Length: 462
Image (cartoon, rainbow, N blue to C red; front, top):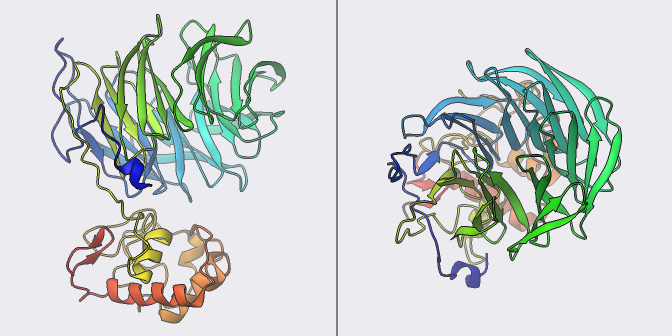
């Protein structure tokens, strides 16, 4: 992030305290936690159930977390592990179930009462980016990197593929059901919004074509209009019958990454790569409030209930809660910056490589615990796949070698697909001998039991 962006004035900010709750609304509405803390990597999406009692979050750490926020605190009910890459989106599916999708190409059906996986479908190597569930909870639609959307029936504890929606000329980024659940809208990198029949998968019409990629989409109550957010920063309301823009909203300076409707349908929020969230009244499209986080982007947003609070997610390991109304006079942003993976060029070269290549997935000390990958504390001399408490893939558990300076160097020289084939380690290499040697030397120092406090959030003791 540039110095100019870091120096942006915070025109409307948010308290990001580690504990405590937001003040209750003037009308005696529910209190909300100021932060949902518990993931081990950046959070990709956040969704609130219709009763405003539970929240689903999907994270780069491969997990989906179910939260209980009914008493004004963020309590983790279940940390659901099943994806073998970043979890990108999750949706409530009624009857105590949820559906999630991830970079591993998997669609997973979860039992929210027990936090266990009911069923899993692997679609291939292409990323699954978004998921929506029909109003009656009987169907799920997914958006994929492979230019398709897919329809699944949710029958008790089973996922069954029903149809594949084809025709886009780029990644499908968003999906939405019609109000009766009989049709499915898709939005794509090719700039098009299309309409399909849910039952047959038949293409019905192109609703609208935008000149830039469409990243987010929401169908508005009544089913006559939808809102989209695009890569050029545009946010607009489309009249579906006319196939034209009905209302142009304020553009973001960077791509629009998320859209959210309040539970009562009266508020809309747009979140962008510029770190801004704007909240509108959907009856006349008046802009009500705006929040700016100089440490953006805003990958996911949610507006519970009447939209008096907004939940948002981005590069932090937690979800933040912004009190939209009544607005506080001043709310300083307390998000840590730079984050662990944002380091200066003049840092120790090994630490710099760790921050960029490893820190999103791994910590270095036992007290920091696991992220998407296990903590690397004491990794030298440990047999691969044996750290207690971490859910290793079957492929990694079958391997039989010791992590040493040589094997760790080989991992980055040749890549996980060669050294740990079939594991869920992301594919990345360091072919430069000097950089790789610096990384291994740093890991040897930082993960040793006598490392003196070196941790994944920086060197705590120098």
